[in-house]
Length: 372
Image (cartoon, rainbow, N blue to C red; front, side, top):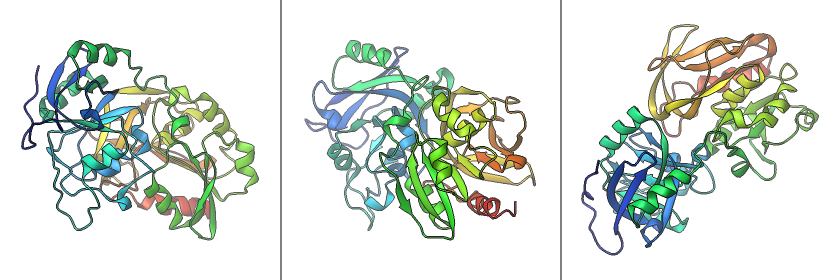
C-alpha cells in the first residue's frame, strides 16, 4: 500500500523522497521536511491520527503526545503558520508529524514563522505528500501502531518501527513534568496542580479562578497537603496509566482529604486510585469533535480529546459515571461526591477545540467552596 505524491510542495534536495513504514510492514511514500530531510535521519514513535481542522500547533506542543507521531487527517497543515501564543508547552512534544500537504507560505497576521522552520529549529520534522485518508483508514482497522519515517531504505525503517516500544507500559510522565514548582493566577482559592504533562491552557483556565501552584508529578501527598490547598488538580499527560503505580499510590492518600478534579490522564489516575482499571483503545480519541453525553441532563457536548487509554466500564466502585462518549460508549466522566472528587476524560480547556465543557472549571470552584 503506497501513498500519493507530494501535493503542491516542490521536489528537490530540501524535501527528498522519504518513506513512512508501519510496524505491520505497510509503507507510505512522501517527501521529508524539517530536520527529517537529512539523509539517514529517522523518527520513530506510536502513530496516531488527529482529526482537528485547526490547532495543529497546540497538538504538536501538547505534552500528552510525548512518544507519538501524529498524522493529521485535515489535508492542509501549516496554512496559518505558528506563533508563541499558541504553544501548550515550551517546545514540540511529538516525535514527528505526517501530513497530506504542508503549507510553507502561511497566511495569517499572527504568524511568526512557518511550520517547517519551527519544527526544524527544534530538531523535528515529518513527511508530507502522504495519502492520509488511506493511512487513517488503515489505523482505524489495524489500530494505532509504532512506525518509523525518514530518508532511508524500507528495511531499515521497518526494523526501527518494530524496535520502537510505543506507549504501552511506558512511564512517559517523567519526561514532561515540571522540574520545579511554579505559580500562576492570584484568585482567592488555592489549587495545587500535579503536573503529569499539563497544558498551558489548563493552567490559564485554573488561574482564572484561583492561585495555582503547579508541582512535579512525583510530589508526595504529604507535601501537597502541607500546602493546605483548597483543591488539587490532576493534569493531562502521556503514556500508559497502568505504568504509574507510584503516582496512584500517592493519589490515594489525597482522596477524601481535599477536593480533586482530574482531566485526561488525571481522570485515569483518579479512577485507578478509586480501584478502577484502564485499557488501551484500538486507535484512541484524538480530535476536536467528539460528542459526549452528560448523563445528569442529557446534554451533548462537543469535546476536544487526546488519549489512547480509557477507564474500564464497571471497574470503579463507589463512583458514578457522569459522561459517556456517544461514538463508542467509553467512560468520559466520573464523580464520587462523598469523596469530593470528579474527573473527565476529555479537555474542557479545548485548545484546540470547542468550549462546550468549560463549565467544569466553575464546578471545581463550587466544589472547593463547599457548594457542590
